[in-house]
Image (cartoon, rainbow, N blue to C red; front, side):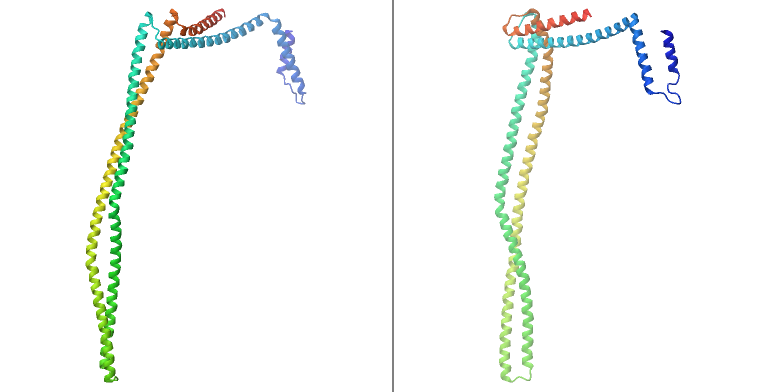
Length: 346
């Protein structure tokens, strides 16, 4: 057999595919023969089989042990949770024994801290609600004050609009009257020139001159009356404008006073609301701190409930409400013992 293997090995060191080429199936045939020989050697070598079996057996035991340890860890954690639940139920139902005095004292102290923190939270919530009401009330008051001021300033604004419209019309009338005067003066100059021309015209008879002079004088007189009337009206407008400007300034001062008053109200409202919001924000921060404190207290209570549950379980205090916990703990204890025995047996 040895010679045969050496022969096979020697044949494999040589090139499998000569230059002229070798069928591919011969390679697979040789490989199959080698595998058969290795299997044959393994079946005949008892020591090798035992070592292999031992290797697989150890690997299997290690795998089984790991699984058992994982189950054991889960069962122990489950027991811890059951003991905590037992402690919570015992504390809730007021079950106290001599051995749990220290734990009871610690839990009572923590409960008092929780109660104090809860009162603080309620007080802060109440204050936040009150501040929100004050914000709403301040906003409503501000709106009412602004509405009242708007009602007061409305007539002034209406009068201001009317006065400015009137001022604009007077300005337009002044321009127009000035134009009318200039136009009348031009017509008057033309009429006077015409009168002089009539008087100096040698081609006209005495009768024609008297008639035309009379017409010319009448025309001049009418133009002078018209000019006088326009000047009078212009003077009236010029006298009215300063009074109107004075009234506009007075109305503007009144409107400015109202606007300043409204801005003051708005500023006071903003400052008051900002103050309330700042207090609410501060209270919110304090609330978060108190809530974190309460969470920390609850975390501190958890291990104490576990200790109390362990004490109650050890003494098996007779209470109907605790029977279910005892039976669950018993089942977990049996499971833990069984798993520990299995681990030892490995």
